[in-house]
Length: 97
Length: 158
Image 1 (tube, chains in turn blue, purple):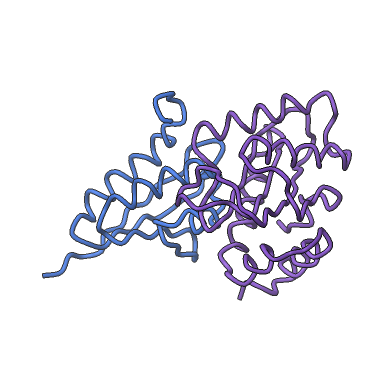
Image 2 (cartoon, chains in turn red, orange):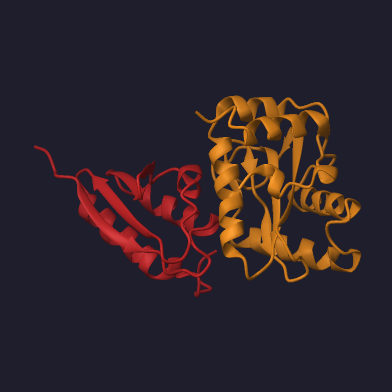
């Protein structure tokens, strides 16, 4: 049995862009899923579970990113990761430590 | 963005004396002060801001690398420096490993793009094992400058 690869496009709305802390949060969340996660910016495709890789995208505010997930929990991974990006990486909350 | 665009050569340290997070940050900011990149009266405020950022989550991003940083209104352009610790420092890094390579960045609050491009450069170069290994083996600041220049000339990234 094989699951199709799923893709979701998101726009970075955080005014600071995808800097170190959001990249860390993204990778922490992505690694909770079994699915392979990749992030695509223009023609650049990187491993969504590597903070070094995510930071090389230098995704500023307004950047369009495609998140791709491939695996049994791909749908859940995409839902969670796109929600994280769309909520500005919860940077306005104090609950994350 | 290249290392030469934000790394202050006079503030590079090949032989960090510090052996904990707070003293690494103090030593690196002190080096920037010595290189006249920051104002003396801002020293405490900058160190405090960088430590506060570390409380949100360590900037020890794995592979023995950390990028302590902050935004600070006292700088007009991105300033940064590089330091190497042969012994390694416990930095609560994401992978639990000791940190040997430090890239410290202070950026003006209104220039998030510059900060992102500096992070991009650091992370792109550090994905190369050879660059990391050579940097860790650097004996003095001149060795580090040479390596950064070679990286700027794309000698490590294919």
